[in-house]
Image (cartoon, rainbow, N blue to C red; front, side, top):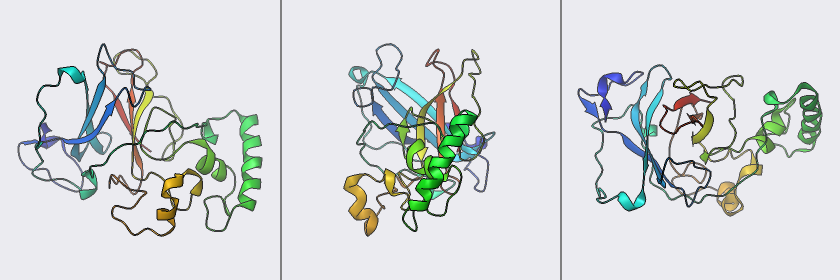
Length: 246
């Protein structure tokens, strides 16, 4: 739990502690990119359903555990008395991890390479179908949205840098450059960006009828469709993690 007085933003938290919500549970056997401490093989991520200063994001807490040491499982986890936004309450769903190849966004490329990418991206945009992310886009738009950084929830990978310019984050405990650990996404993919839509979801994406929609299985919504990125220190998993809105 976290103190309710830590909340900030449009909603007011109730008096007293606020129960944190389960956000993600990841097993190392399913996601080898995780770097657990010691013999831990399970990562549990919780968050408070209220915005917190200074990030203006729900505050997260990371817990590393060993599956064999988990004795009692709560069938009814505690729920907060109130939440700031309904979009901060995750819809339970199962993960289907897959490994994908990413490339840095154009803003992180060396100038000469970025110029080549811009020229290539412009050619692709001209040939893109009307209504797609590339159609009518100039500069880096097609490359960034269709090829560079994958959308959706992910472990590790590369940051999108959609809200700020690229900048390193450093551990407050040792100064090491922190690495992306987990991306909490508002959307798994955008309907007008067909390149990242999984093959098994394309029929549903073309004529969505279910609830939640295929692109928003967790029903999480952050700042108008942005992502919350959690960064970890590569020197020690015990060092404090950092959060960034992108």
